[in-house]
Each structure stands twice: as C-alpha cells, then as structure tokens.
Image 1 (cartoon, rainbow, N blue to C red):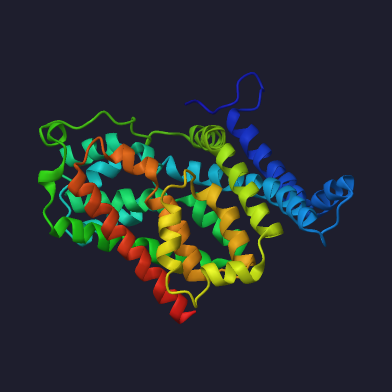
Image 2: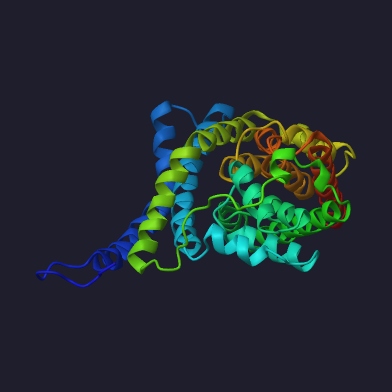
Length: 349
C-alpha cells in the first residue's frame, strides 16, 4: 500500500501516528476519572456505598467503563501484534513438530494468535491435514482461548503482574501437559471419520506478512470493532453478576464456599464454571468480586480456567470433529490439571 502523501494531503500513516498519541492521552484521562464517574452516578440514585444496593451500583458503574477501556486498549495493541501471525504460518510452523517440543511451541503460539474456541472446527481440520499431531493441536486449542491477550491484559492491570504471571504459567502448563497426555494416548481413531479422511488443508485466511503499518493499525481497529461487538453483552452480564456478589453476598459465606478450608470448593468451582457461557473479559469482573469477598486465589483461578477452557459451547463445537471418547478424555485431562492447580495454590498461597 502506498503511504506517500498525495497533493500535500497527509498520508493514512500520518493520521495514525497523530491519532494514537491523542487517543492514549484521552484514554488515561477517562481512566483516571472512573471513581468520580461512579460516585456521581451513585449520588443521582440517593444511595451510599454503605448500603448493599449502593455498593453494587458503584461497582457496576466503576467496572463497566473500566473493563471496556481496558478491553479497547488491549485488543487494539494485540490486534496489531497478531497481524504478524497468520493462521497459515502458524499451521506450517507446527507441522511435523515432535511431541513435547511441539506442545510447548503450540501453547506459546496460542497466546499471541487470533484464535478462540469458535475456530475449533477449521483449525482442527487445517492443522491435522497439515501433519500437526493431535496432541500438539490440543495444546494449541487449550492455550488459545484460555491464555489469550484479553485475559492476561485485564489480569495484569486489575490484579498486578504476579497474578497475571501465575495465570500465564499455570495455563501454559495445563495446555502443554494435557496435549502431551492426549498425544501419548494415541486417540486419533476417535476423530470423526470425515476429519480423518481429509487429505488437503482447510482454507485459512490469507497471509499477513505483506501488511504495511497502516494495514496493521487498521487490523488493530478492526479487532476492536469485531471483538467488542461480539462480547460486550457477556461483559455486561459478568459485571452485573460481579456487582451482585460484591454488594449483596456476605464475605463469610463466600469465604466458606470458595475458601481454602472447604476441600470441595475447587471441584465445585470447576463444575460451576463449565456451563457458563462467557469469555475471559466477561469472567474477569466475577473473579474480581469473588476475590474481594474472600474467595481463595487457587479456587478462583480454577473457576476462571474452567469457564474459559471447558465451556459448554466449546465442547459442543468440538463435538463436530471429535467422537465422544475423545471429548471425554479432553475434558477429563484438562479438568484434572485445573483441579491440581487449584489445590496446589490453595495450599501454597
């Protein structure tokens, strides 16, 4: 794409280079006014933060703009980064990698590549037809939705680098070792017959290596518009749930239900998270409210991981390419890893 100026008119790149710094300044100003905005809205209702309803209202009007501001910033930045990673390049890179090394590479690539559980069918077809081993493919598909840029970015800003790093390490470990175990079990026979019979790769989006910087900035903005349009309702639902927990649920109750002392809290959280239909951005406000109310970190992380990595919609999508035996193995292996994570960190922390 030609980025030179024409008839003294600024080039598209110039607009981006001017617009991005201005947008950053506006972003930081709005972020600094979140508490004032929430307090102003609360004052209009006649409530105070000393009441259950008032605390819930403040939480909702503080967290809603906060989550969306963070979401827009993180998604735009990662959209630009992701423009360097095309599905075709990712598939070719993973093809032929042996178990262990391939699982690690696949899990790491899952963090920065623009895939989610909704991409399960074309990815399975494309990856397997290109010679990517089944276990390596699973490592990628576990990592891509669970350790995505939205989850890490929001965790970092809201809970600090330690929690974000902990989530990253735990998620990678689950993705790598789950893929290795599934690969060792040799369960290719439990792919749907039509998947095993495919000899050519599935059609994937075009390569992005020829993108200019204008193309990459446009791609970042495209990610913002598409992702926010798809998930805003889940974010709002998550914030409403979080506000209700934050304002009305007693701390003693939450600590007893999701605290370290109750041995059943971790499996209960995993089971509770599986049927939830949300994503990383939508579950973050719930996680925030749970931790504020005394839920332990290990139990909360187990809940978050089950929501993202073992959601019922993902399982239904995977059913199109996997037989019941492989679905059950996938759920069992990943759930076991999540349970271990939850118990270990409830003991250690």
